[in-house]
Length: 452
Image (cartoon, rainbow, N blue to C red; front, side, top):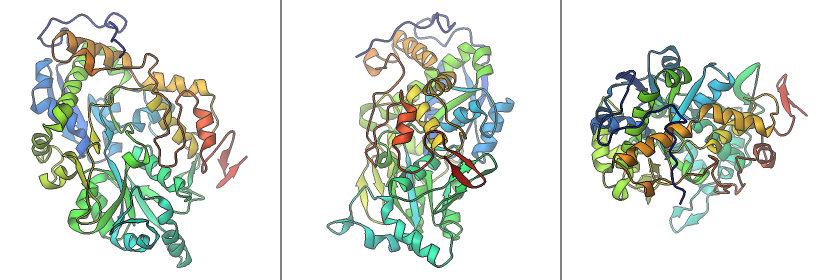
């Protein structure tokens, strides 16, 4: 196990007295944004359990209507930081959509998403499914959806799918699942940001809380979203989750805590305090085999936070997940907040998002491997995280054996994907070229066509 190194000096952070709030805080009153999703939990827990207060911070949490509004709030300074899609600070750093210098010292969770289809689509998929007894075998490949999409096309109908934001994990997971099943999700170009060029389906944006109602109205035929909006579809009887993201990419990084680079530079001690409080919240959420999850569900069900029915939140937060009505299966890692080094901001996680942006044309031209590494290191700040962890250990609020970090900030290569393809963050171009559908090598998109 790797020992944490003393990084306070290298990050311009001063030593902290034991069992005391973080010294030298530059800004103690903060407003942080979030979207009404289960994985905002570290923010809610840090506030409700007094972890922010312990660090000398007075934090107001404010729900945002959608990811664009949230992003704009952080960039403008209206929000001091926020629960963000992992792709948002990365995309901002390369100027895709909003151009801004955003960073993250803390990854908020692993897993937590699923793909849900309407009841009608589910019934049409069933004949294609392998069965284990009287229940479908999981994970379900998107190949079972292919005949349904072809039937829609034969009738001249588009097959519409929703996701929450163009640079969201949900978009990339949905596209990964579709492509692994032989379905082309379409690509982006500089002059067509719909992401639908050459696609067998039409993927568009729907805000998370609106997913079930949009599905019920028939506007979309399925969607990729975080909880509780998949379990809400089951509870309402309007849809069936067909796969969780843990089966698309095991223990995938999902959300991050995002701030502007300017805020971190101006407020290093405040950033340290925030990171410490969030690490403590994540530990609390996972400790003793998720023993605190029932209390967390009660907290999250408040209208101030997620505002969903506690029973629906508990479906995924307490170790199980319901697919077709009554098909409840164990899912102990559906939401992971601390174990498996969930909170450490790995450079390789950032690189994976960049590979998907390149794969689907959001990055329009080929980039050398060194470029991916450079962008990842400009956004993800493991030194700040390590300094916060070191401080918590010194204060007796955490123990050294709870942390295990790779010295270079890259996870080991893994093939824990639904298609079995191995991902090595140190070799992004080789990874991109190994994927079956999407841009490769020097390919670009122009005039609605892929140019070799």
